[in-house]
Image (tube, rainbow, N blue to C red; front, side, top):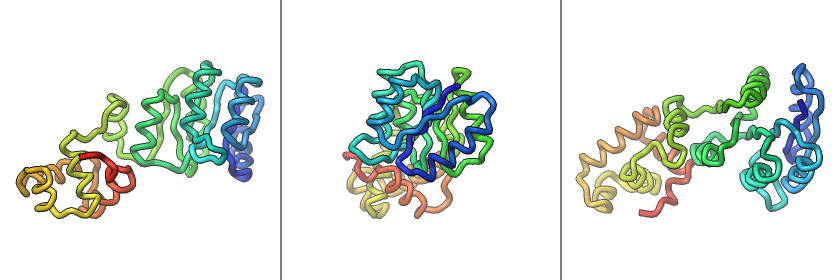
Length: 210
């Protein structure tokens, strides 16, 4: 099969190429260092698989490129290859029906597994996100694993509000706030409150409108 690597870092592209050259089913590898070049090359070369970075220069981020590729080369399977393992990114990839999602620090064999899996028409998502959370996101990519009320609580927690202050803002009791936090920590498999705060900031819940 023919593969297209899209990444603005030369060393990353060359490293991925070395791994791909070991896969028997891969017979041709092409490269692009930005989104615009990727769209042009994909239309010209018609690759079967596209390994796509999310953070690139030139005004076109990976998701914007993915949308264009899906419209112009719909037969190509896209595998996001990134360092981003936050829920916000994974959720967006699922919403766009992107076939695969793989972290750049994954094991060598996972790249081949991802390629073979999406080639067979299945999805392949391998991240550091807890399995339970990832499965829930897959089942309903349009919504978060958290309830709307939990999302409101998480937004305020990320902004540094105390339980009492969160309760005052949402007109609920402190005990209810504590229960929401406990439920979220269980869902997200977190053990400490500070991890919940970090999760809120990392996944942009601090921007959620109350």
